Length: 143
Image (cartoon, rainbow, N blue to C red):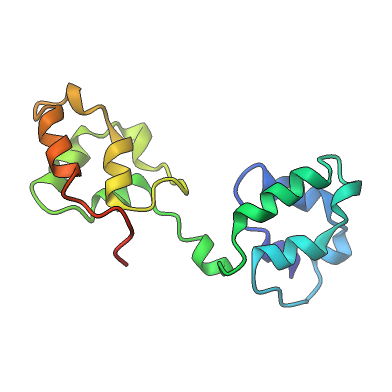
């Protein structure tokens, strides 16, 4: 079903659904990736966004990424929960509530989340404390 496979980031999801016919949205073709669903759902050059727009987005999705893998965007809070103590509690305490629920493809590791969660220099621990800890964290996801 194309509709199920269009769990894309905004605004691409709503645009893709608008461009796809109802029959195709409800079809039972088992697409394994976002790319395969997107490539068969509608003719890109006839969409309001045009061929170039969709081909650039298509290239960013990643050929081998399955739908399940691409949906696993963790929130800043979920990533901060992976830090060791006392950094975990301190980071969560320093993070404004409006940042806690943010999920992004740019926050894939606790290190990424720590960088984006709050302004280090405005905490009681200070920027040097957070910078030193940040540099001990791995660059890539550990899971």
